[in-house]
Image (cartoon, rainbow, N blue to C red; front, side, top):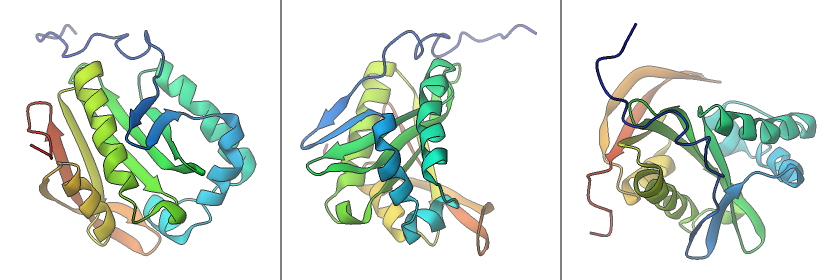
Length: 194
């Protein structure tokens, strides 16, 4: 069935380019490498990451997870980066559920315990937002977090993603369904430092 609208971004807008490194201050977002598998496995032993992302991962699963990012990029479905800095891996950030036709993507992130409290997540989110709007050309970025996850809420607000509302019972966690805050930013919104 033909669409009556011109797509916001044409197919190939992501897959036809190499996944970039994105640098901001003293952190770099870079594509995942198989050498990161042990660090990813370690990340999923952290109680906060396990609670909010509702999974664990052994090294073989981490290797498969890392390897899957190249295919997801080529399929224009998702794009994931390792957040790195002095001392190595600091966390992860990704564009999820990319809809080029609509110009929309969701964002997920986590930060390792040793990197928390250093504004790693809001700086990474700001850097990825700048690339997604300025280079890729997306129109809207959104993220969700449990209403019980105050730290993630602070990250979103610091990076210029105002809260839009609450999805009641929107995600299943180990202790049951959680209400989820929805935050979003449009390409036309002012930057958080403006």
